[in-house]
Amino acid sequence: MDRQLFKRPFTIDEGITFTCPTCGNFSLQLDKSKFHTSDSSSSRKMMKEESYWEEEWISSIYTAIFVCQNSNCEEHVVSSGTGFVSQEPVFTQDDRYTYTTTEYVCFYNPKFFQPTLHFFKIPDNCPEEIRNPLLEAFSITLLSPSSAANKVRVSIENLLTKFSIPKTTTNKHKKRVRLNLDTRIEKAKTKNTVLGQLEDILYAIKWLGNAGSHSSAEITLDDVFDAYELMQHILIELYRKRPLNTPSEFIL
Image (cartoon, rainbow, N blue to C red; front, top):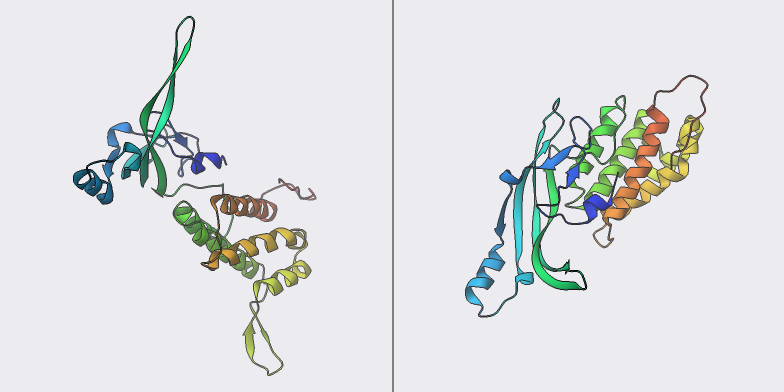
């Protein structure tokens, strides 16, 4: 996963390419004929009412269609997001000198894709209870990193349940009480050798998910992408098909 692809804005003419969510090829490209942008209401009001304004003060929204260039797929993905204007340098040169001028360029930040883009490949044999929260996380990653991190935490909870790690216990008053995720991770290493090896990674994802649940915590895209890399590692270790008696391998 090239996280920089999602952290920087794109321009219409740069030929930006994403991984197709359907076939998995790096072949999803913008159909420029189906790209539409409109200035935001505040920008239109500014240009109408203010006697002075600059291009860089303009904000916009966009909708677009990305098309998979794989002839066996040709998936269509709708995208929407925000835009802004920036003054960028332009370099020209002759036999003796290089000249610098500037021009205004429109940049766009994607916030939504449908079908949602996959930030890593989930193993085919991964159970739906674990897969579905991750797909939900993928769909809101660019719009709300904190919410996405919390969805990854939900996936971890479901993973532990799938491996028969109890969710509740009986307290001294003989009442059923819910076990917190820390306790469940601690119990996991006695149930499954691989889960024991992954203990530190499980705690790391739990911490990010907890931070995503609190409005005061600032979860960045990098934080979420870190969680995805860790989660990918966990799923490969648990669900990758490999010959018997082959030791597990860490990929990070």
